[in-house]
Image (cartoon, rainbow, N blue to C red; front, side, top):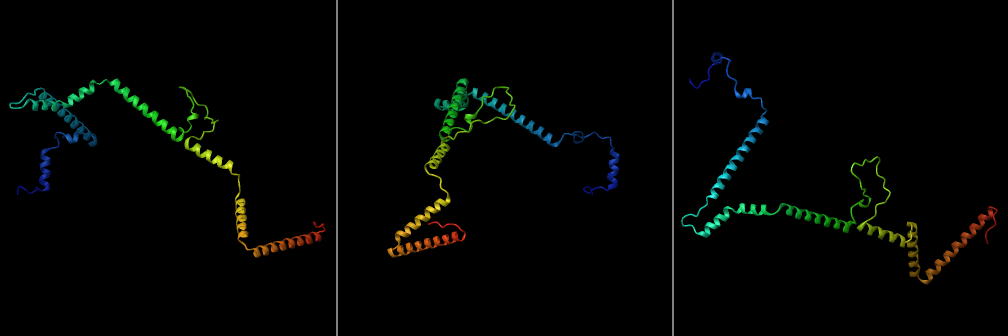
Length: 234
């Protein structure tokens, strides 16, 4: 049957009859990498589209130059059509008529004012940038033989200076007191409040107990000094 595939022996005989001295195909002779070939094709497509786009613009430009009023068209409609067709050209002409140097000077002045405003804002908030007062003037071609030596302590600026002055004033106004001193003050205040709230009889009993403890301590101290051969204090 014609749609059946021939046996292997018949196919081999046909191949042998054709011979091996056949012309080299393009796929066999071209050793260009596929990625590079793809880039080349892409470049050709871009160039082709660019050429077609340019030709189309030229054609449209030629059509614009031949604008004429159509039969039955009002002058008002024809003027509107002409303005719409040449709108881009009119804008480009106005932009090109403006001096380039003047536009550059205007932009440069605007950037300069913006930079000055930013610097003033930083100085107002933070008192300037860090190490601005330690900046060195380095001339062209100067070689550094050693690391820089900081001989001036950076100053506190802006809000940092305000916080530093506030802390310094607090330290100078208030004398230094340890935690033990503060605890002793709190204890004395607590005892004073308790004495004020005591009744007269409770206060008298507390005074008698204090006197008894003091006398007992003195007697014990005198006995201990006498046993050691020392003269007790009178």
